[in-house]
Image (cartoon, rainbow, N blue to C red):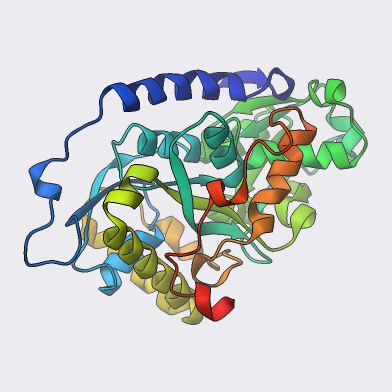
Length: 350
């Protein structure tokens, strides 16, 4: 486990890594492999999009490919990512063509002058899909004030769960100095419940299948959830580089359109049909992974139709980062941050 106080600013490691990434990206402008060049017979500029995934999970682009929406584009899986911030960093270094992360992490990367733009939302929070901050049932922690001096397990620093915790404390009148006394501990999500039950941390974030399995075992209670704080909202976006969007506009539009259709397909089908499809995808792709987590799929969690991005999906985090001193007022403009122009549902929503 890696210990770090939230007050020490999770952006330290993030900014350091990004600086090196940007140098690499500008100094080593890579030539595209021949396998990715479009043929004369296709209208798209590339045939393959490289990406990272998560073991035991099916992303919406993967679902789009399985449904036939992505053809003639194909996905090339290059490995599993450890977090959203890491995933979008690989977009900057051009190791992948698209990646996704929490919108606050996207903003921090843009503030580091990364040449990226968000093109669609892909995960979020609603009544069925949410992350909770759990304590043991007999824990003395009953109120926000009880969190001072305690350790909270999160999956990574500088991302969704850190922002929500800091917002929760801020809403309850904590000063920045007091927030700094709540220690964030990086724990892989699959180990968070065990760390909590063994007393290695006092609070752990649990969501999805890990939350449901933990609640089935009993003995835990939720202090609050991200849904309690913000209601239904899209929390993360897929990003692409400016270079990709400018040089391969048809491929970028086709990717967004196909993924948007997959989001809408998942949101319109009976839950059992979606779960069966996801299980089938995991079984057929041959990555020696456990498919049990997809059985707990509940909803897309995406607030905007087909992943449409709303201003509030970013302004809520811009306001927070400005308040926390991590962004200057007016430092980022919305037109720099995201575009809905590639999404087929944009005009119908206007």
